[in-house]
Every structure is written in C-alpha cells, then in structure tokens.
Amino acid sequence: MKKVKIEAIGVKKVFIDENTGREIVAIENISLKVYEHEFAVLIGPSGAGKSTFLYLIAGFEKPTRGQIFLDGRPITEPGPDRGIVFQEYVLFPWKTVLGNVMFGLELNGYPKEEAVKRAMKYIKLVGLQGFEHAYPHTLSGGMKQRVAIARALAYDPEVLLMDEPFGSLDAQTRMLLVDDLARIHVETGKTVVFVTHNVEEALLLADRIFIFSARPSRIIKVVEIPYEKPRQPHDERLLALRKQILDILREEVRKMINREIKGFP
Image (tube, rainbow, N blue to C red):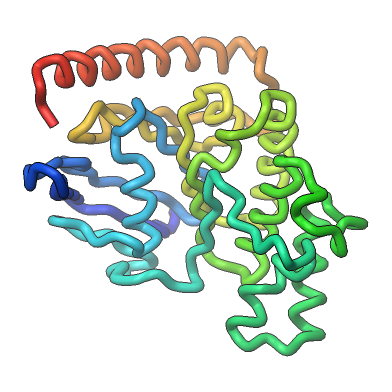
C-alpha cells in the first residue's frame, strides 16, 4: 500500500487586497494526497493558486481554513524536511557554486568537511562537477538553476517543492533540465511537488497531474501518467493526454477571463 506523504483536507486561502480591503479567495476547497516518492505536478491557469498552495505546503503561508499534513503531522511553519526551488535562482553572487550549495548545511551546523562532501555529491548529481569553484555570474541560466536544485537537495529534505523552476529558461535548456530532473527523481526517490504552466513538461515528469480550476481554485481533474521514465515528447499516448489537458485548461482560462470582464476579484 502506498504511504501518504502529504495530505490536504478542505484547504481554503483568502487574501485581503491592501488597496480595497476586499477579500480575494485564492483557493476555495482543495483536498488531495501525494504519496511517498511520487512526482506530483500542479497545473492550471495563471493566478489559479498553484504557487499559493505550494507555499502552504512549505509553511510560508497558513490556510484560512483546512489543514495540510506531512507524514500525518500538521504543517505549521517551514522546516528542513521540505526543500524549495523557485523560478528565480536566488543564489549568493559572492559565493561559488560549492559555497552556495554548502550554505544551508553550514547554517544547520554541519562540520565543514561533511558539508563539502555532501555538497560535492549533489553538485555531481546535477551535472556541475568541474564548476564547483565558479561564481554565479559566469554560469548560464540553466546552470544556475542546477545549483539551486543541488542546494535544495543537499540537506536531504523528504519533500522537494518546485515553483516553476524552468519558467524563465529557453526551450532547449528547459528540455535538458526536464530530462535531468526525471533522472534525479529516480535516483533520489524524493517526493516532489512541482508547479508549472507547461503541459509537455508536466507529462514528461509527473506520476500524477493535479489540474487546478480558475480562481477561486479547486482540483477539477487528476490525470495519472502510468508510463515509465524517461518519456519522449512525441509519444502518441502523451499527445492524447496533452490534448485532453489543454482542452480543460482552455475552458478554465475562458471562465477566468469572463470573471475579470464582469469585475469579480
């Protein structure tokens, strides 16, 4: 039987517009389960609350209603059991690749020798061996994101949270990193929750795809991808799923545009 790693029950999130004081319901009612070692992808229209939900799992935000559990324990704050990778690289420009990857380890009291050993392990895992003494300004965007992934993995979190990590990269670099991330997931066995707008990316990486509705968001469909990895973009089975998902997303975007025309927050 699969072990439930993350469980959300009846989660709602409301923000207050600072200018108008009006309530904005980002997430209406989300319940889901993510299993141990699973690669779960969250996809939906822009502004549908995907990143908000990821930040609730991270502990950066608190639900207005409902709860999220990690291994059966309520999530109340950030913790070392969850690593996060953002769309922006958020690297320290004055530190080398090795220094950036070691940062969290040193912060958490790892002896320097052990921190170096662990950092080098993950630098190699993400394909940056030989660049450990390079500074961020000398690296391409894809290489910078590899550093960010290595840093998030270095202190061995149980869950890896990824917020559109390849969103700012060109198409070729994105595809290389998608292939590498699929490999890294197989090698590490981490539970991954991954936010993206890119359907092809989702189909190549996911074990299951959770499709979010237009805001206020709910989960309107869960698509299981039972095919082995690595997967090929032109696999006919994936192309059929791609059409199905795009049709759902187009309808949700129409709903979102209609709401905006009518003046709803």
